[in-house]
Length: 261
Image (cartoon, rainbow, N blue to C red; front, side, top):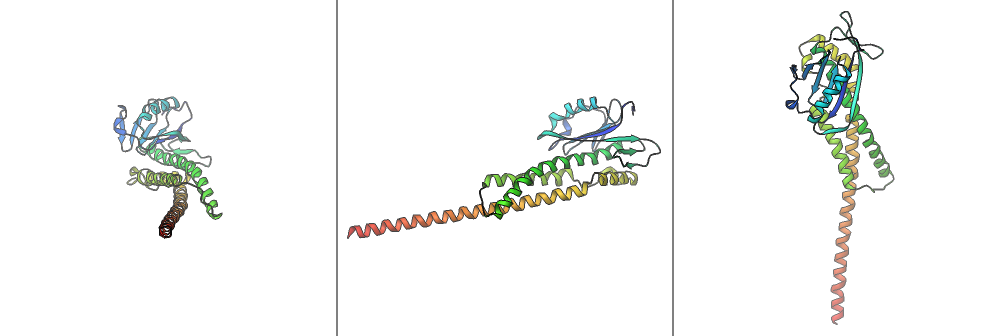
């Protein structure tokens, strides 16, 4: 690896899914996950759940690869989540995370790059959804306040949109990102497994995933309760309409009867 520049790993969350079959013809060192060597050292790792990571690569090359990958992302996020961390590579290093937050590696091979990329990409995805859920949670908190005040002004369309958004996030996090699942490359390699464990602990992946899941549950519960109240109000309103129509019809019948006399 070229050490003329400080080494770093940089993850970008681009969107829902990357169509890997359409990626340009880079010479891959692995297809699961899609991994290829950088021109000036390091490795690029492209993950199906919508993240691209450069490990020990140069910023200018990262921008070129990003430009090639972006058209293959569906759906693409409007703002790209970005997370980076410093790397230190040395044969005698104890692999893991230093107190200053930098990652120490004994070497920079494809396997270690994939482990770093997997953990950093998951952290970037969590960061993206934490920000997104925070804005939804603020709106839901306002709904809870309105419920406490016995007011129900929101529309069912807005509520359905919020429920749908939380369900989409849950589906993506559980079905594609699999935050709590270790990458396959660590399953049969204790050294890589320990490295991933240290990175996952440093980035607080499990704790953040639990907190995010709990917020999504609260969003669904509050919005669902609110929606039920709206439906109840509509049902009662419809019942009153029917009662009024029946009353009017009775009045008309009585009017006709008495009018005929």
